[in-house]
Amino acid sequence: MIQVTETASKKIVANLTKRGQGLGIRLGVRTTGCSGLAYVLEYVDKVNPEDIAYEQDRFIIVVDPKSSAYLNGLEIDYVRQGLNEGFEFNNPMEKDRCGCGESFRI
Image (cartoon, rainbow, N blue to C red; front, side, top):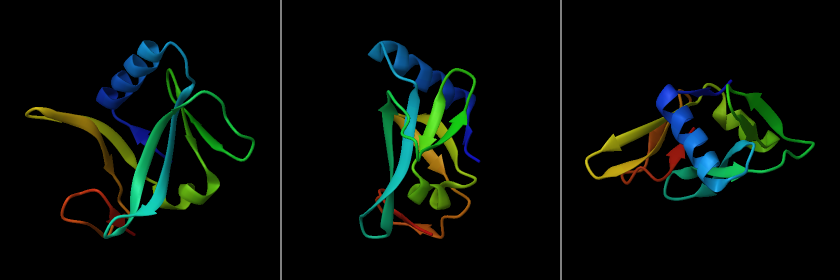
């Protein structure tokens, strides 16, 4: 299961509204960086038959089957720190992250 904080949920809905279309977000992982994996988030306009969809209040989260094993229990938040802001992924399965925070290892 994937959880979304209220702050992140509001940001996702605002971005979908600004785009003028979209069902929700597609969340996945890809191989990269010094620790091995990185989160990928993009807006989604259609769901593929093999996708796993998690219904939220006003949008859906779509995950491909290969990524789902790495995302179980994930919490998505949206944070602002000084001039920086963005989505933050809190994954209880993470063993460590690289120094720059770009990639992680499970």
